Amino acid sequence: MDSIAQQLMRNPVFSHVYEQLWRPVFTRLFSLGGSGTADFDTALSAYLARPGDRRILDVACGPGNYTRRFADGLSGDGRSIGIDFSPSMLAKAARTNATDRTSYIRADAHSIPFADNSFDTVTCLAALYLIPDPLPVVDELLRVTRPGGEVVIFTSVQTDLTSLPGVREVAGMSGYRIFGRHEIVERLHAAGAEHVEQTITGQGQYVLAVKPDPREADQKSR
Ligand SMILES: C[S@@+](CC[C@H](N)C(=O)[O-])C[C@H]1O[C@@H](n2cnc3c(N)ncnc32)[C@H](O)[C@@H]1O
Image 1 (cartoon, rainbow, N blue to C red):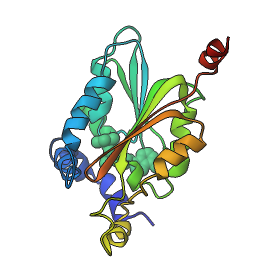
Image 2 (cartoon, rainbow, N blue to C red):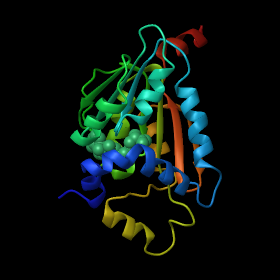
Image 3 (cartoon, rainbow, N blue to C red):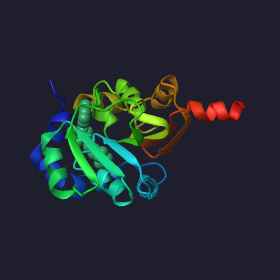
Image 4 (cartoon, rainbow, N blue to C red):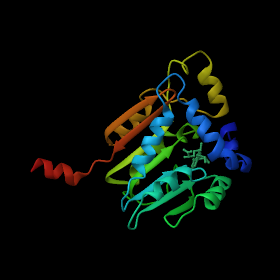
């Protein structure tokens, strides 16, 4: 049976209020007890929207709020593709965040419908904590990233606050998972990622990782 959180994501009303109301409030809530998640978010968005002829995949894109932001910086043949399994989120994305550099596709993050090594950048923001079996999704993110490309994740993390008795259990009942401090980083390492950087801001973590490029390793060894 779907969790409360998953049912919410499929609710058309929620998709209407998500971008303007829910996400900004939620981002600020994540700052509780730490440095500004909102500031990190702004800096990261600017970095990911840097100009370039790049292919970006935004996994669990919701109403396309980031997919479009990333697309706005692209040049040449650059494209930003959002995938999500909620029809109402995708309908909202198509209405409000479609440009000639964006595409939206209905798909499950567990089996991303793209070949290995397809994208320069793969993001999964504010979604892994809603997915009941999230660690195989981390492997999928890396699979579709090209060698030398980057994976960017924003999700929950265990902190002093969320370690208080009962917090994890209550969150879990609603379908919100709180990741252990090293869970995501370790999974990325196990899947072969390098340069894995974790930044904890309040109740959330940003994790950036690079998929190794065997050609670079080759050149260094010469
Ligand atoms: C909180 S929204 C995040 C939207 C956007 N990425 C952001 O950062 O604001 C989470 C999204 O994850 C999607 N989602 C959850 N599980 C998924 C899955 N297994 N495959 C694809 N999308 C999923 C939901 O439909 C929802 O749109």
